[in-house]
Amino acid sequence: MEGIKEFLKENRGYLKWGSKKLAFRLNTTKDDIINIKKEIREEDSLVAAGKKNFKRVFFDIETSPNVMYSWRAGYKLNLPPQNIIQERRIICICWKYEHDEKVHYLTWDDKQCDKTMLEVFIDVVIDADEIIGHNGDRFDIPWVRTRAIIHGLAFPAYVKSLDTLKKARRGGFNFNSNKLDYLAEILLGENKMETGGFSLWTNIMEDNCKESMDKMVKYCSKDVELLERVYHKLDSYIKPNTHVGMISNGDKETCPGCGSDDFNYVKKMSTAAGTLQHLLQCKDCSKYYKISNTSYKKIAK
Picture: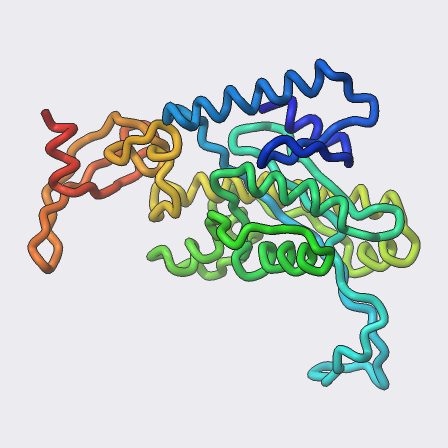
């Protein structure tokens, strides 16, 4: 749906068509709308036929702090919400589709309002089969949901996500740190970009500094690129949160990590209750996965 992606990136208007909300230009022609509707029909038919391309989105956000009254500076201060002068908001959102080179981004507007940005990004989330963030389940997604409800924007209660921080922490590893910067360094030999400190945020909030905003977008975009590469390093070692094969081709006997039906048989296993299972390894993505005895009989014929 490249046409829809471009519309989402470039424009802020919307057109309702059935259950779909389409972005449109002010100079959109009738042919443009017809072509977009055609793309949706084609994708819907692929979904119905069980041949949909799995759409995985990697994302990150940068946020502003609350601006508050305080009698003094220091740590462990008790500041009630009544002291808030200006509510914290989302400054920018960056995301990329798996295996695509381009990182997309949105920023708050000239009045430092994040509503329009969220309207566009929520469509990206809804359109994705899985979204991936580092500490996304605890930080990024709740932030987006909170800002959405403040603006009165609909946001689905059911978002299929994978949190690489959770996978690093609870996936059977013992890293010295589970921060993205450390994981990128030890797994990729790279580091996050330096921000230059809190002045980057104050320059954006107080002066609407374009150079600082450009730097923040660059910093956030680099995090998204590192996130995808760290995920691919972890991928063959962790349990998936979504069965790609079911989304792509409607076949649960395929690899849950990539949807491939090409595998090496590893061994027979049994649960404590005596249920027979089979351990397989995908030839394409190297992920190990288990399937039931009933499912194995279907593909072993």
